[in-house]
Image (cartoon, rainbow, N blue to C red; front, top):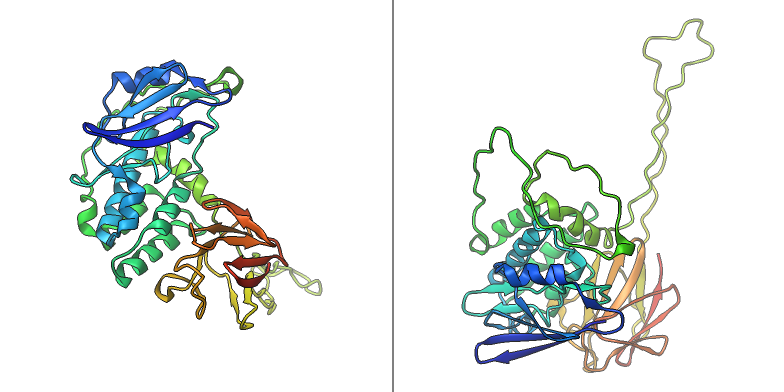
Length: 375
């Protein structure tokens, strides 16, 4: 896994990347970024046989901005910038998993309010990102909000992002325009050419072992956001709720006693009870209180306005101690850099690492214990 380090110099930021394991430089991708100056992307420089340095922007790590405090206008400005840059990446044919989406290494220009990302032009990259949805989750979790209104607005946006139907870039931008009109410019419409031709774009190379037979290209134009929808929905699919079982429609069966079947047989409906949805639960041992984990992003801590399960009367629990994510019917817990850590059956959970919960597990936040039961 490539090792990364963020540093600030007099002429701007510098991110150091050192290869590890079987990772090697992909010269074709490297030359693309050195020969083309692309808005929102840092420029790589090969400084050693196993090292790349990224420069070309002023700013600080995005994580610093988030922890310093943001209002909803700045939050949505950051998200809109991020989605726009990722849209450009997809339209240029980038290998999306090679984009670093860790808030510790995303550069934010505090004066221009601009986001800068960087791309790892290496073979056999072991440091792949886990999707734009996970990136947005981390940004939303790490951020300190300046008001309750800001927090509730972002909470609603993340529930929209993690909904069962997924989302598109266009839908996300429209949501942002409603919440913070100044964060993203209004969409521009333009007449399409009578005979549109597919835009040529650089195709990044892949390892021989990963090559797939090329399929004939379709001449139909794509929406500017369509190219990234598959990548976004890939991350969004991971956080879909399990849908309720769909009941079969009663079949239309003509009466066997009729001499001649009628043109429209009578439909006999049955009153079939709908199944009751059962959610996973957490039971606080100290009080016996049980609560359903009924949201895709479920926060636990002692700050009542920011969490879904408020742990009172325990000062050792952090304000936003841990988060439980639900996807594909399973629950995963993540420690949010808490002071006194999170444990599962006595084993500590490393910060920013998700661990799957099993029915009967004992979840411990500092010295506060909870029993987890899977629904």
